[in-house]
Image (cartoon, rainbow, N blue to C red; front, side, top):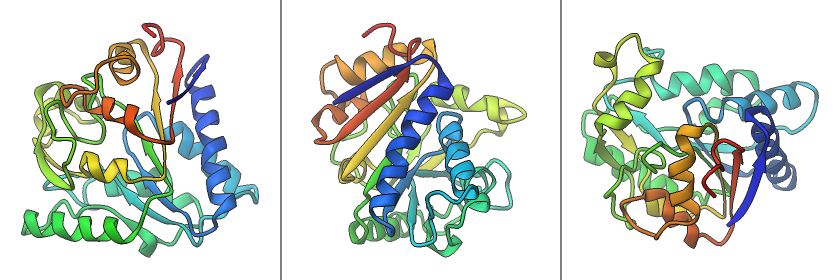
Length: 240
């Protein structure tokens, strides 16, 4: 695993963007795996500024998001499809028909998982962007998720619900279930960039890099990936 330690969040975002721009410049029709939450927002701002300045183009890029809350869709400003449009897609030249995310309001959850897995099987991701939860989860793959997992519906842990509640008016509004790519879907990406910032992520980062490869720390599976880069600030790297 390649490890890049930088001073702060802005520097982390800029380092991630360097890798992103290299991928989409080298391959105009790259397939991107994208994440939500506060961690990648700085990266997305870098992508937007560069695209608007005539830099990298995303008009032939396809994108697949990691996860979506069960019960939410674009009509909810807390859905991840809304988040992606507000924070990235509406501000770059990507075609919305080339963006993909699980349907949070799918009537048949099992069929929706099968649909998304089929899409992922047909579109190898060139670059997967990840954040990491304070308990070591990636996407919504909580501790104990089998390494062989594919897209599935997960019951969110109280830890994750608490972490995500900062984005809602109250913790009671946070959905209790989510669709998520599985760990084997994530590992199928050609290149992975995982970002972490803040002291609250230090323990998880240690488990990611130095800990035992175990389903108790889902992110630890990335130790087995052939091309994974961790970009973190000094606070997140404090236990390494």
